[in-house]
Image (tube, rainbow, N blue to C red):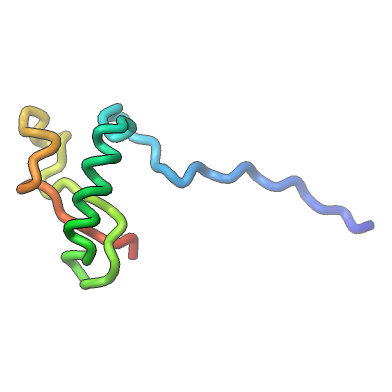
Length: 77
């Protein structure tokens, strides 16, 4: 039997984020609803899978985290 090196553990598909709001059930529901209403990427028109803040929350921490006017649908490519 040939030697097979040990596999590295897979990275989590969800990106770890410093802001705990991104891990909340409320955010996941909000994100999913936003993607359902805006299914196409604003950059290329492909199928969107990411709900992005236009103005990053780290630059504007006092703005409303769930404001639809600050969201855009993006794809991963």
